[in-house]
Image 1 (cartoon, one colour):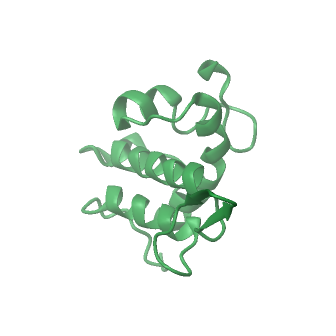
Image 2: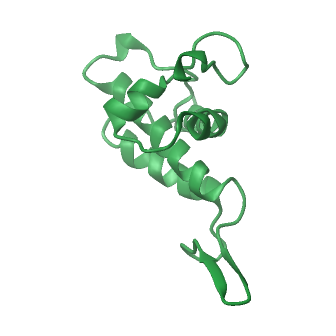
Image 3: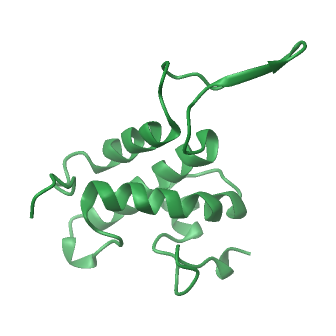
Length: 128
């Protein structure tokens, strides 16, 4: 199933393979859930780094750090979505995903990605 994953635009290879997600990052999402979260994760990491794909010329494990940042963001988006993080209850059944009041899934994903990018010099500062 993972061989058919494509990039966010729906064509070409995915910038982060499901195999890397499982083996290089240690992720546990199903292939379909990873593929569904990948476009949002790519937007998140692209905004942080100014790069829409890993560049092998970065060297020193930096390309893998970029890929791990995408994986971390994908995990967060798969768990929390892009909107507000929260919970709900129906009768005695309740689900709670609270982090901090007012936190969004995008903020959680951004923090997870930044943690993977620490020390790489890839975090986009806004001016090039």
